[in-house]
Image (cartoon, rainbow, N blue to C red):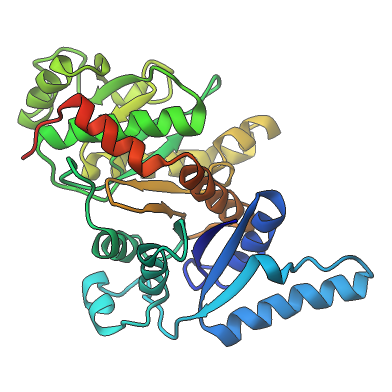
Length: 326
């Protein structure tokens, strides 16, 4: 049985919706969850589910053989500095969850809490993979045919050209494991399709990507992110985060005009969360407003990555691509 560590205190609606999603994941996937957080609060949520089942006269929704509680008395709040909080709160739920993975007591972790704290906790507990200099958050971009991957969307706001090549390799592994895209097309997000367009970062990264063994199709503009032109789109974390937030805001504004099927396609909960790529352990970062469905699918994604030997695959492909360091 593969165990996934879940930061039960992370997110705007924790622990209630996190526990709801975690229990749903134990029923939907062949996995077990370690719920990390304040034990009394988590136990209260489990009792709520047990009581609901009892009142309905149904089989219990809580399979205790697939659940364990790991007490963590502290929480990193959204407004707090991640570095200061992790230093002052050794019992923070995200830190304890990362330690479970580092010790081998869980195969991966999911958190919808403070993104900065999750990135720092993962980096501190797992370190970076061989051949990778910076971590990257990979967002799933919905499209009519099949999803695309945009990275980085916030883990590394300042990047150098070799970092974008590393992101492209890791994004390619993600595309193969999660979406079955055997030869993902890689695009570099820039302000024009010509190789000479953009800033120094994009111009130098273009040349490195062109010389790599990746299926590099060249620069793509922001309007092409949803077009299907590229399967993996790379950029620095500042640019990617802005692009992602603009997209999220647009979807919210247009939600009332969309068909039910299209709403499902653009619903972040369908994909669960953004993998943190480059660190030495499976880490899925959920949206702060994650619903129970998003938590369920984020835990399922962590399970899929752990089952597929995702971390080892990234290391092998980084080595095979001879990606430069900087």
